[in-house]
Image: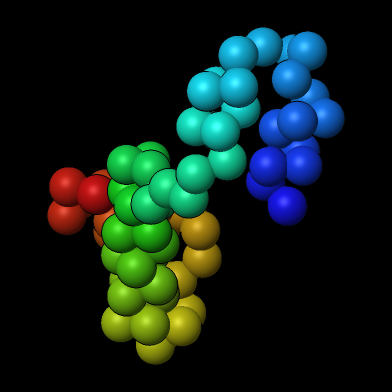
Length: 66
């Protein structure tokens, strides 16, 4: 499948670029940071007996350095 795509789009640029772009990658640093922040937000919300709104959760997470 990848080889067919590369052969078809060879005119766009070097085949190495196309092949490199098709390699599987792990999550980016931003994605990992977003996931960690989401965990903190959820933990704050649950710790408040699910009563905190967005502003309170934001203040709670910000106070913890998140």
